[in-house]
Length: 139
Image (tube, rainbow, N blue to C red; front, side):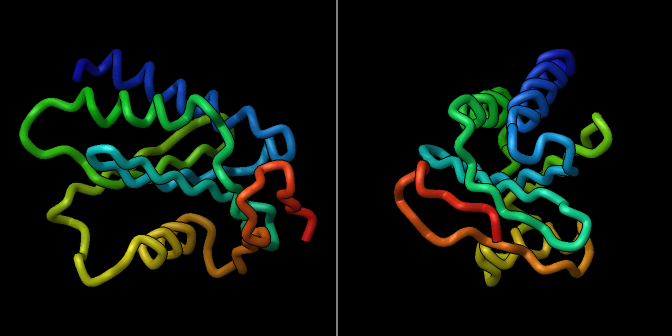
């Protein structure tokens, strides 16, 4: 993938993450897992004394992630990524399949990612619901 296209897609991901009206100015971590026919995004916000998990309800985010993943050249694509948005700048780390421990599940890898970036703060998850309009992050 051309560097310009990579930068454009990464900038687009940052713009999309910045659309969170409830927590727009907080440091944001996107942990994403991609494979053929599968995109899983997890979004975390640093609230200084705790980390808030945000269900991804950004309609264009999966498309931007898929475009970034699909546009890679070569035989080995990354499978997971961390995208940290802090002070208007982003940092990205890609994880290729050979770097992912098959004995750890996604939940564990995602939690370790939050710990790496935000330290040992509690992570607050909203109650589980299938209806996006029922989400309540005021805990």
